[in-house]
Image (tube, helix red, strand yellow):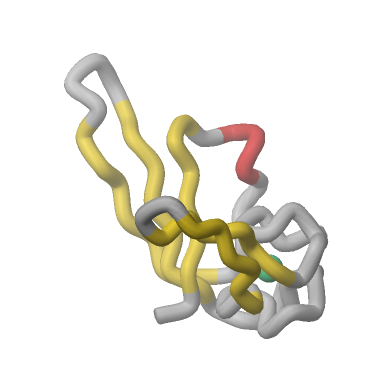
Length: 73
Ligand SMILES: [Zn+2]
């Protein structure tokens, strides 16, 4: 499946003060795709108070979650 962190590009644009830089995507190791057998740290928010939910496991469908993030650290 497409890496949500870099949207399949293999890199992410990072802003450091006024400079913009390109950084390799650490989630998919610049592959642009996630291995569905690999476990990743994922978070999203739930409910009216936006409580943060944590999940460690195979990549979930980002469409189903609010403020979804994924990392492998
Ligand atoms: Zn990526």
